[in-house]
Amino acid sequence: MKRVFKINNLADTKMLASKTANLIKGGEVLFLSGPIGAGKTIFVKALCKELKIKQSPISASFSLAKKYTSKKYTVFHIDLFRLEEDEIYNLGIDEMLGNEKAIFLVEWPDAGANFFTKDRLNITINLETGDKRKIEIIAGGKKSTEVLKKLWQKK
Image (cartoon, rainbow, N blue to C red; front, top):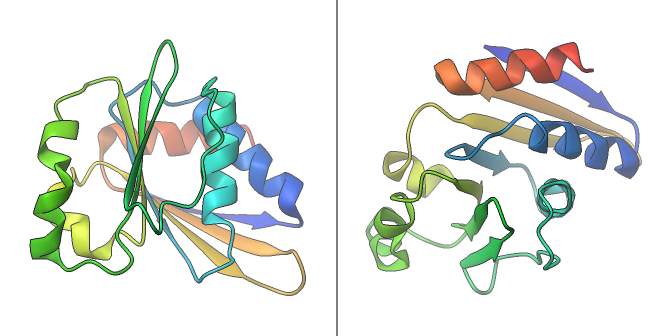
């Protein structure tokens, strides 16, 4: 299932992330793609805020993997920008995957596609003019399709 959301400004990006956060229950994987400056980390920050994560996420570019927790969730914010598939083993993703309340937010996910379930939300943020964005979300399985259906209804 695929849906495209037209975003007019930063507030719209944050709103879409907040609505997404309200639909996930734990165990979800969100792949975030798009050029530098498209708003991937803005999306992550808004989603984490809605999940009651106290820490303010920063770009994971220099640390590769960040862990944020709330009373209910553990969020792993992972950036695979400069990594090859064989280097990803060193991040310990297989240990992270054992947590059923974990939520995975993976930026630049291409190299890590084989490490995660196919039942995921593939979110691509495309730059348009000014602050406008086109956010394409593709659901890859039953659980992610249910989230996307509900997200589209709340549009």
